[in-house]
Image (cartoon, rainbow, N blue to C red):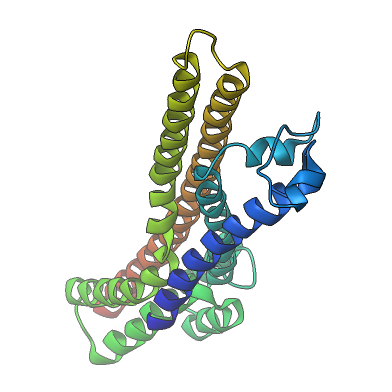
Length: 270
C-alpha cells in the first residue's frame, strides 16, 4: 500500500514536470515559429509556421503544460491499471476457468479444483481456493448446511476484501482526472477569451493578432481538456467493468461451492 501511494505521488509529479518540459522545449522550440532567429536570441514566440500544430498548441498558454501533465497521468495510470487488472485475471481465460472449477466442484473433485486454481493464479483463483479450503474444513467439522454456507460465504467475502483494494487502487485518480481535465480546459478557455476581449477593447482599432491568439488559446485548451476527460472516463468505465466481471466470476464459483456442500450433506443424511 505504501509503495503504491509513493508510486502514485511520484507519477503525478513526474507527469506534470514532463508535460511542462515538452511544452517548453518541444512545442516551444524556435524551429516551430516564424521568428526562429529572434527566439534564439531571447525573443518571445511569434506566429507559428503554417501547419505546425506543435507551435499552435504551444500558443495555448500556461494552462497547456498542466493539461498535458493531466493527459500523461491518464495514460500512465491507465497502462498501470491495465497491467494490474490483467494480472489479477490470471494466466488463462477467467470464464473458462470458472466453468472448469464449477465442473470439478459439482463432481466433488475438490483437490482437482484447487489444482485448477493453482494453475490459473490471479485474484479469482485466490478467492476460489480460499473458499475451497474452507469447504474442506467445514466438511471435516461436519457443519450443517446453513452453518457451512455462512462460513464458506464469509471466507470468500474476506478473501475478496483483501484482493479488491489492489484492483481498485488508483481508479479514484482516473475518475478525478475526468473532472479536473474538464475544469482545467474550461480555465484555459476562460483565460483565452479574456485575452480575446482585451484585444477587442484595446483602443479604437482592435488588435487582430491578439484577438486571434486569444481565441486560439481558448480553443486549444478546450480541446486538450476534453481529450483528457474523454480518455479518463473511457479508461475508468473499462476498468470498473473488468472488476465487476471478476467479482461476478467469484460469486459464481462461491455459489457452486455452497451448493455442492448442500448436496454432500443431503447425501450424508440419507
